[in-house]
Image (cartoon, rainbow, N blue to C red; front, side, top):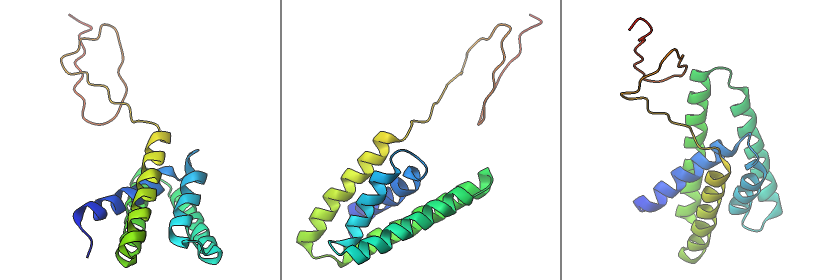
Amino acid sequence: MLVEGLIALAGAGGGAIVQAAGTDAWNGIRGGVARLFGRGESGREQAELERLDRTRAVLEAAQDGNETERVQIAQAAVWQTRLETLLEELPETERQQVVAELKALVAQASAQTPEAVHNDFQNATFTHSQVQGSGTMTVTNNFNK
């Protein structure tokens, strides 16, 4: 059984794989994850590359916001489970090496993924302006004042 820190790392790894799909980070993450699972066996590594390509295809095929989010969550969970299983089955010395490699991949994916932009307009005043966005917003139109 894995400790919480390793479960969290596996979750971050699953999220990083999904996050990297379709970005410039994909090739590096894809190759790194395949090496983790392949553990020096080219046949296993090739099988993981193909599995990762299928994951990317499934993510790209998602059509709308709700479906995309559902597919992303499902794929992240699949990869988290696979990473947990890998970490659980490795001898301690190998596990430490894989943990270090997985942490590096998660950091790589995070560094190459654009940050979300958050604008907080609380108590803001807009004069003859328009605000467009999504999420929770309160906009008061003061054109007549």
